[in-house]
Amino acid sequence: MKKRILIVDDEQDILDLLQHNLETEGYEIVTALNGDSALELVESQPLDLVILDIMLPGKDGWEVLREIRRRPEGQYLPVIFLTAKDSEVDEVVGLELGADDYIIKPISIRKLQARVKTVLRKTAKQQDEPSGKIHFGHFEIDPSSYIVKVQGSTVNLTKKEFEILAYLAKRPGRVITRDILLNEIWGDDVVVIDRTIDVHIRKIREKLGEEYQNLIETIKGVGYRFKVED
Image (cartoon, rainbow, N blue to C red):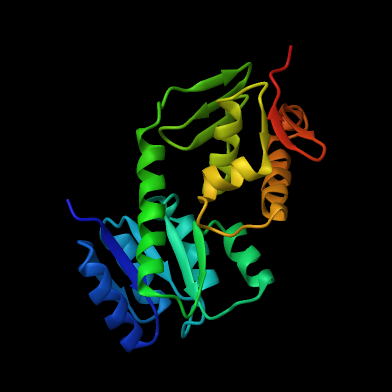
């Protein structure tokens, strides 16, 4: 089946250009000119990827992504920001909100096609990974449903937070560098600063609570390790 991609941009000529060039790659394309229309499409039909502008009329791209992540059908839907907002702060914000990639306009069509393939390939790889539950005492991770439970209570993690935690938990006792986490979670085509990983780790620890936050150890100057408590 063709992968279905939603492109959201308030400029029709950009929509037409992207739609044409991605359709030549074999994708099925749907488009939206504003955030409200985009959210309706996310809710009404299955999608494999969203390419999202930030500067939109009405709801901007930040709010659209937040709304997507709040909805069951969009909680783990891959999203790429394609935007003219080119500051490092904007990029960090976009990735911390849970975007899978952040691309600054203008970009060549070939590069965009490559980045789309990377995100879709990474998503397919994650879906194909073993989905057995991971247990440590009263701590449980279910990769098949993106659910984490602590003492029976569900911990609400973002997609990226879950992926980082699951990656570490599948490799207990092994030191994972920031570079490995960046490449495995975001992909080696995405430029993400080390601070992004650190912020995500801090948020994961806060959500795990006092009893379990120390399961993720910081190895100073290197990265992180998932520690199995004795």
